[in-house]
Image (cartoon, rainbow, N blue to C red; front, top):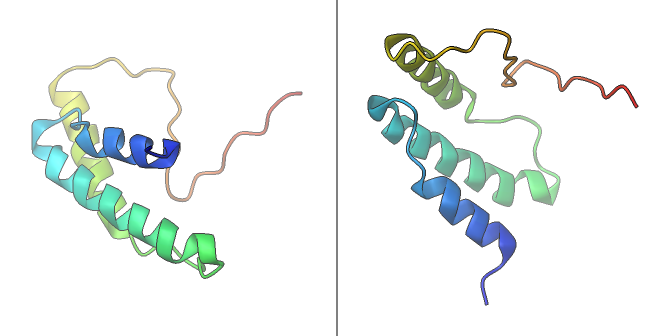
Amino acid sequence: MTSDSAVTAAVADAMNSVGEGCTDMKREYDQCFNRWFAEKFLKGEGSGDPCTDLFKRYQQCVQKAIKEKEIPIEGLEFMGHGKEKPESSS
């Protein structure tokens, strides 16, 4: 029987990026993050994310693809490195 986290990781790994040229960067970042999360963070050794540079390069690629494909994103807020999760109003 497969665990939920393994299924989630397999699905995320299989998904392509919004920009075809960004898919390899996405997979590289996903692998880096998943390795760090499992091997460091969950063991209490997560003092920093070594994948930040990969994420920033991937983010720039996605932003470029969104502009090129003219995907409307007005009014959307994005989370990422250096951005805090908005507090809930409840």
